[in-house]
Image: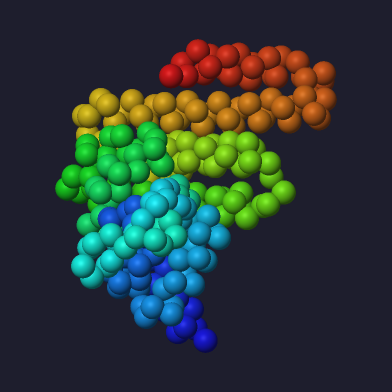
Length: 254
């Protein structure tokens, strides 16, 4: 039983990776070229990935091509062309190995998936800094994949709210990526971050912005808790100091 699950997961990952490299493509291309298993296995997996929200039809052509000759076959039904969704990209990344060669391609093709990370990826993915950046990306992709699965699987959410939640998860991933206090594998990376960033002012600015955003979130929640518990009535000076810090951080928000 366990072996079948592993083989199925590997097939799904190969389909994701093929779409990342070659998409948009149609089902027959995936079936013949993705090296994801036998044809009876691959076709149901494509439907499954679409149902799970990892791939989507991005184009529909009125004619189709013969996979062997390349010639147009007329008189057939329109054929769908598929690519990864944001969730599919996140799932793909979360299951990659740190030495995979596909990171640069993903950063270029799907830059809007991880805004604030992929836009400076060429600066990050170099030498020792690259190893650290890839480890960090795998970490935040794993967190994002878990959150996105919950959002996408909740069919009670209106479309607008679901799309907003997906946007928030992806944007928050950049804050987690850059925040030195974020934990990865149970250890703090503050010292490592300083060594990795070196003197690159652009990257250091990202870290500062992430710290401010994270503090805004945390202190804002604390002020709300104070008010809900009535502490603003018992200790107004304490709450006022928190609010002053909050206001100062808002002024520094990029």
